[in-house]
Length: 218
Image (tube, rainbow, N blue to C red):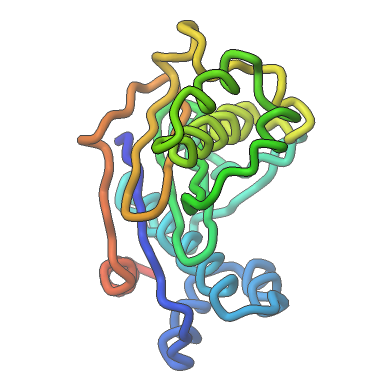
């Protein structure tokens, strides 16, 4: 079941298509999406939830109407009644990432850009900083590799960013829990007890997500 999905979205909204997809999510989620200011944020929030719903329907052989998302005390969302189905969502700029697993999972995606080393010195361990600063040509990629690993680890546990300094993602004890890859200009990381690798990565288009929705039962 484990998989890591990536999709890059356009900033424009097709009103009819968007309205159709909104009918696939809960009324509460619909209200939250429509309150967002920018169209791309509305699309990222909607498409990522539609994708998770389609994956849950297909994996668990259930109807969309049976899906109810809840939140744990830590704030991490989960699918009520299906403890064997774990998922996590992340989005940034024009791209989204969704991870699913039989084990608790955390996912993070960031667009690669110029690294702010002040953030590294504030939130990263000494070994992480030395690794990032050890190369000039790969500095930005290394920075976002570390950052997304940390975020994925925190999201797997349902912890907030205040704990970000408490983990060294370059340590041997975490090597089996973390997988990081680059897709286009984005760095993706996933953290889970299930071992992820490149074979788990599935790249989707907007049309693919829409097609998945059209093939699902209501």
